[in-house]
Image (cartoon, rainbow, N blue to C red; front, top):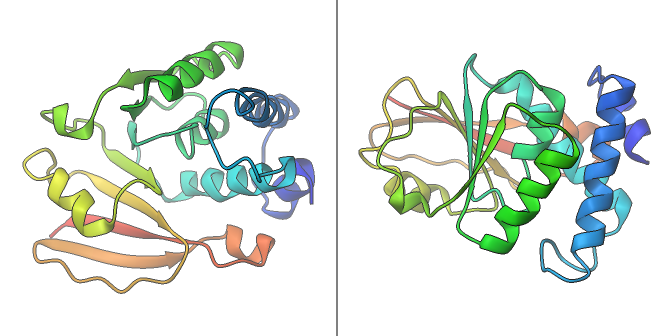
Length: 198
């Protein structure tokens, strides 16, 4: 399925402008990927459309308030959430300067005014004030929570994208696995861990 078919199948309720922004975003990844390693060279346009959907459905699981995307890479899920939810404040963090310059370019191209880009390591962030923390293919859950020690509070909700069902028990945290709505549309295993301090 192409991007528009995926959006319709998932009942994402996007406007024509948002679908056009998502399409532009995917084209920019393909263009930049020729000279910078943003994603695997094997990925085609339809694969990236699937990644977009996979990330966009997270919006339904966020708490009201701002979002920080740690290890944003080429913008999954941060840019996708910026397209789907243009009024929500989003901060995209990545330590790779090539990737943050790509993110800055996309933010300007798509006029994503609520998105800000930070070239930084998670370890350099003292405190996370954003309500929602999202991650995709960044760190293992245990390592991620260790790197967030003393930076988060009970008001934060962490959404960590995973491809396989994970049952995880970490003292001090409530962790629940949820199957993603994208898995039915894509007919692939997709899910995420919802994590909050207990």
